[in-house]
Image 1 (cartoon, helix red, strand yellow):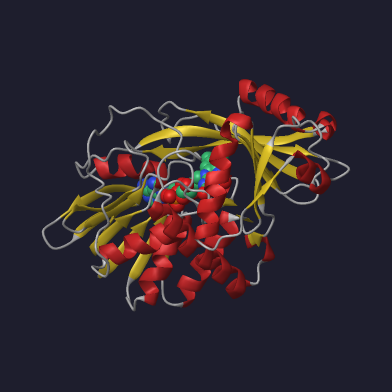
Image 2 (tube, protein in one colour):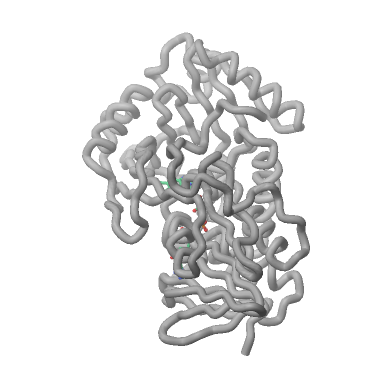
Length: 381
Ligand SMILES: Cc1cc2nc3c(=O)[nH]c(=O)nc-3n(C[C@H](O)[C@H](O)[C@H](O)COP(=O)(O)OP(=O)(O)OC[C@H]3O[C@@H](n4cnc5c(N)ncnc54)[C@H](O)[C@@H]3O)c2cc1C
């Protein structure tokens, strides 16, 4: 049997691509995922922030499209954990207040709700943020929401299965072997054949394509998150404090996710520390206490680390790497908010239904580039 399309990797990107493929009418699509379950790697470790505060015009479109996927998955599955409408408050010191104002105007010009809040308004609305300086400026974006990427991916995967998607979970693809008119996918001592293969293997994508002699400019870096326990509860939206780069994400009535622990060095996806390191934990405790006194009583519930894919220009790698072989990777730490749209686009490109965007996955330099944070407020729009 020859599959029309094999998708490798069942995270947010791969599951979204799989749903797109079966909806396009393909009859033999197979998704292969190394873990026994869907979305257990980076997609399971994300803070889950979905915001329009992105810095490239393409990202604005992709976030908008991804929002539709998340809303649709919620409606389809009825799983309320997929999406929480918390809104986000971005906080800046006086030197970056003009930037916040500029971004607020930009959002408003796109019809997206955005308000500038002064100290008093912040205090009145979220008194728990009682340690802020009185010259702080806030950007309130009420339409930003939080998603559970694992619940989303499972919902989308189930829907795709219902529409005919084949799946092999718990099977790691060992090697790819492109031929003239098909690609051989080596998995569990078997050789599967596909007319086209789409690699959505997150930070493993480079290693996997290397098995076919193809190199892509993807450098995995490590990002950490902690879950803090507030026994008495709290009342906060998603918060992003720009000077420390700390972000807080509500996670149920008693738990708050707190992150800032990006390590801008290359890590091996098969061998890295998957728990938060001591420096991160000390830093996050200190930073949250500087935002609110309530954090002094919070306990550490757990901490973890995952990998994100750095690219030379911080833009995704998406398109053809060989006649019948395609890739979508290079999330730069904000691939949940754009992942559904990028999975869809990658699938359409692989099927010849969309023009390849200017995101050539074979662009140089391949490895000799600095890893830079992807999710920032600055840069062009
Ligand atoms: C701590 C942290 C916080 C984050 N917070 C946010 C956030 O708030 N908002 C946001 O937008 N983004 C955030 N991100 C980024 C986000 O998690 C990623 O961009 C997103 O999950 C990428 O999805 P993916 O499907 O590309 O990758 P993954 O979810 O990693 O999926 C890739 C899949 O491929 C599989 N795979 C790999 N190799 C093989 C193989 N050989 N054979 C078969 N299967 C294979 C893996 O098992 C994995 O399931 C965060 C990331 C981290 C680590």
